[in-house]
Image 1 (cartoon, rainbow, N blue to C red):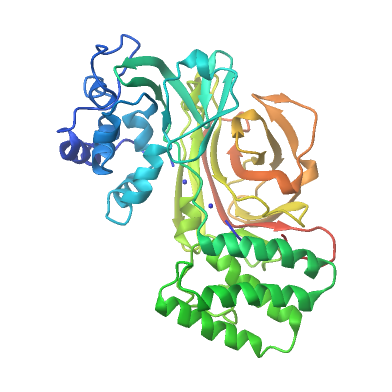
Image 2: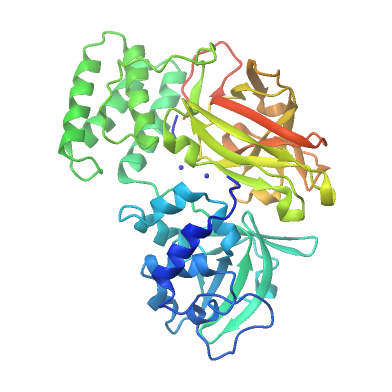
Length: 453
């Protein structure tokens, strides 16, 4: 299926190395409402804070320190060192490579807004546009200002060229849509309805035309070898007499491109990896976890945002993603979760979420969010697990219960509106937890075979 990130203790060695690389540019944000002297620019306010060394280093590494010292004004949402540590060593190291620096720069720009916006200016707004061209959802609840998934810990720290708000989480923007993806999204929007209405030949023709364009034209991100591999795959598929089989073969390639498998080394005829759980695939794959990118798209959100003490980490091994840690009931806590955004339209044509999981006997929750602001309320439903046993969970989207801040609300989720998925451990029990997930699919509970648009 088409797609678009773990609570790890702070790595002091990594943060120190970063700081050493960037301390020459004076800092980036302040640490408390006591505010640095007004004559200091944004990139000089932070060094004095002592809490933003990783951010300072990242800004320097991305080549943005000079820009943030400019006239502005800018509003910066500044993640703390502890917030960066939540990303994990591997992710941080990748961002510092030559290949990763464009992504690092985009993530940092996702935290910067043109103009000077105090907290009072942000309250009441649904969102605000960043220098990355993205939109940050905003919400205010129970005296807290929320910026997407982050809580503003300290607001309104003044600088000569703007203002800084310190937040407790690094905000990761959605993946940029590549030209090939834009073309293929258009093809799927046109082809899938034809398939579902019985015009299988028409669907196959649309998919083939779009993939032919990517193979023939050099403007879609494939190098010469990638285009040659794609051309070879398309020639093999064209020999298949069944238009239904051709449609599914083309769709598997399309989904591979969405998943970032741009080299096209694998033809459509290659079977999917054998199921470790014994449950065969039956729907449109959203997360399969044989690809490392699927695991990297998930991130943890813990009760620490509300003062709790629960932990949680995400790891990936042998085609499964593992979410483990411990829940604590201290400070009214008790939950740990893993979350990932998904592109628009993955659930079109489906009415249920299918998970293949191996748990520890505790109850978990599957959650879904509609729209960009996951804090505006979500849809949850509990599912049981059997200790050390692979289990198939099929959760109709209509059965998910709308909740916000622990309160039940009216309303149901529409499959086509789902933009994020979550797995929660929130059973009001303290102790260790562990759940392994082999796959997450969008499925239809009807007997008709359909494409999602």
